Length: 319
View 1 (cartoon, one colour):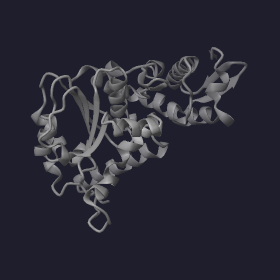
View 2 (cartoon, one colour):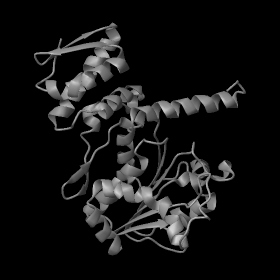
View 3 (tube, one colour):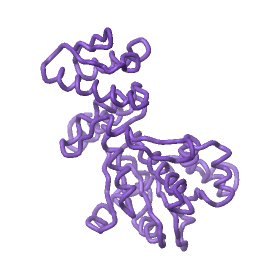
View 4 (cartoon, rainbow, N blue to C red):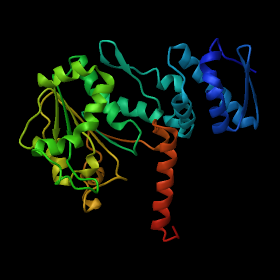
C-alpha cells in the first residue's frame, strides 16, 4: 500500500493512461483507490515501481504535469549508472528561465547532466541520438544566458550538408536554398518564446541564425554560440567554429554521430573532436542515450531497432 499524498488524479492520467503505461513498462499491477496505490508483482519490481510513483507524486506536488513522456522518462532514468542516477522529481526540479514567464526543465538524468555541463563549462560537446533534447536544451540555455544578461548575443549555426538529397534544383538565391537547413533552430526558438519576440531579437541582431560557412573570419565576443548538427561538419570546420570564441563567450556543439551525411563519415569533425579535444580543461563531453529520448514513445524503439540492424551488419549476420 502506497500513500499518493493527494496526487491521485494527476498520477492516473485521463482514462488511467498513465497507470496502464507504467504497468506495461514495469510489469507491476497497479490499482489506485482512495488516494492509495496497491502494487502487486515480483518483489523487486514492486519496490522499484513504488519508488517511481513516489517520485512522480513529488513532481506533481511541485506543479509538474505527469504525462506519458514523464512516465517513460522516469522509467528510463532507472537505466542510468547508480553514480549518475537522479530521482525524477530532482530532475524536473531544475529550472532554465528562458524569458520573463517561461521556464524549461530537463526530463531525464542525462538531460540534467547536460544542463550542468552547459552551466559550468566554456565549451560543451553533446552527442546523442535523435529526440534526446540536445538542440532544444542548448538553445534554452542560450536564451537563459541572454535573459540573465550574461551574454549580449546568441549565435546559432548549422552546416549546410545535404541529407542524401540535392537542393540545387530548388528556386531562389543561395540564402533561400539554405533556409530549410536552419528551420529546426527557428522551431526551437518559437517553442520557447513568442514569435514576435523572436523576430524582434533577430531584427536587432541579438539572435543570429547562420550557416556554418558564414562564421569564418569572425570573433564572437560576449556571446553564446551553438553549432547544431555538428556531425556534418569537417574537422577543419569544427576547428574554425571553436576558434571563433572571444572573451566572455561560451559554446555548445550538438550532434548525432549515427546520422552523418558527409561523403566520408570518418571525416566528421564531431567524431574526431572526441580524440582531439579530450582532457582539455574547460571542455566537457556529454553523451546522451536512447534512455534520454523524450519524443514519441516509438522514437526510442526506432533508434533501438536501427542499432540492432547496424550491429548485425558489423558482425556479418544476416539482415
